[in-house]
Amino acid sequence: MARIAVLVPDLMLSSRMVEPLRAAGYEVVTGSLPEVAEDADLLVCDLDSVDPVEVASLGLPSIGFHSHLDRETGEKGRSAGLGLVVPRSRAARELPELVASLLES
Image (tube, rainbow, N blue to C red):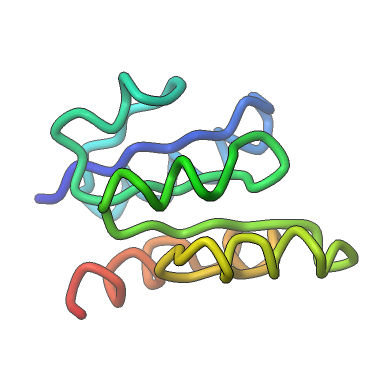
């Protein structure tokens, strides 16, 4: 199964992202760039805490999420070339499905 790097410094939010991925059978690593990107198949990141340009420069499939009220941050992620940028609520609700769809493409 794929190895997913989760870059989410907020511990409560991180657990909401990590546990569903583990339940879906993914190997999950957490931490900060660039360490967690080593051997990762996909990155999941909170766009409030990372530079989307840095994430995109790693060349890995990536999912960035942001507050649904903060459209500017979402646009920065899209402009940087992240594979998928979604509101935080959607990421929390659908992350295993979003990961699967991005890995398949």
